[in-house]
Image 1 (cartoon, rainbow, N blue to C red):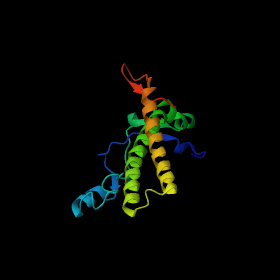
Image 2 (image 1 turned 90 degrees about the vertical axis):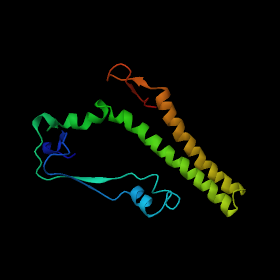
Image 3 (image 1 turned 45 degrees about the vertical axis):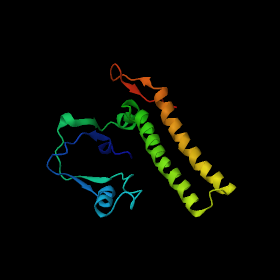
Image 4 (image 1 turned 135 degrees about the vertical axis):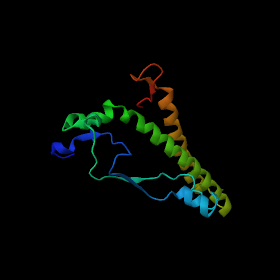
Length: 162
C-alpha cells in the first residue's frame, strides 16, 4: 500500500458512469461452443474464469460512494471487518474441488486408455490426486458444517474459519 495516503482509498463505482470501461477477453467457453463441442475442448468449455481490466478514465465518484478515504487502518482491515476474509476461502476450496473432480476423472481415464492403470506407482500417483480432491471437498463441507451465525441478520451464516 505504500505510505502515500492518497492510495488508502475504496469506493463503489457505478458501472454505467461515464468513463468506466471493462475490457474483457473473449470467453473460452463461448469460443468452444461456437467452434466445437465441450468434448472437443473439455477444460476451456467447463472451467472458464473470465477476467477483465477495469479502466476508470476521469470517472466522477460521488462522495456517498466513497467507503474509505486516506485511512490506512481501515484500508488494511476491511477484508477482516467486512467478512471477505471469511468467505473467500470457501469459494476457493469449492472451486478447486470441482476442478480436482474433473482432473482426477481425466487422469483415471487417461491411465486406463494407455494401459498403465494397474502399475502400483501409477496407482499411488492417482491416489494422491484423489486424496487432494477429497481433502478440498472435506474442507468445503467442514466450513459449512461448522458455520457461525453472522451479524448480517437472522439466518445469515458465515463459513467456519477452520
